[in-house]
Figure 1 (cartoon, rainbow, N blue to C red):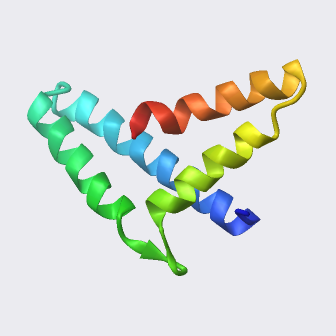
Figure 2: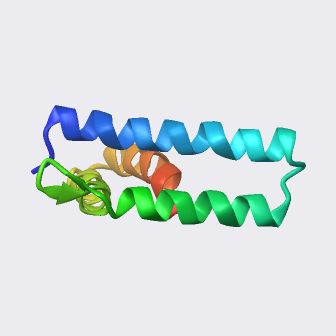
Length: 90
C-alpha cells in the first residue's frame, strides 16, 4: 500500500518531469536529442531507491492503487484521468 508521502513523491516526480519537458519544448524547440537525454535522466532517477523501494515500484503501486479503487463509473473516470499523466511518461 502506498502512503500519503509516497503518493506525494510520485506526484512531485510527475510535476518535475512536466517542468523539464516544457523546458525542452520551449528552450530547445523540442529537439529529439534533448527529449532523449531527458528520458534517460528520468529513467536513471526512477531506478534509484527511495525508502527501500525504487521510484519505479512506487509509481507502479501508485497506478495499481488508482485502478483498484475502480468500481463505479465516476471512480473509473477519475482513475483514467489520473493514470493518463504517469502512463504517458513512462
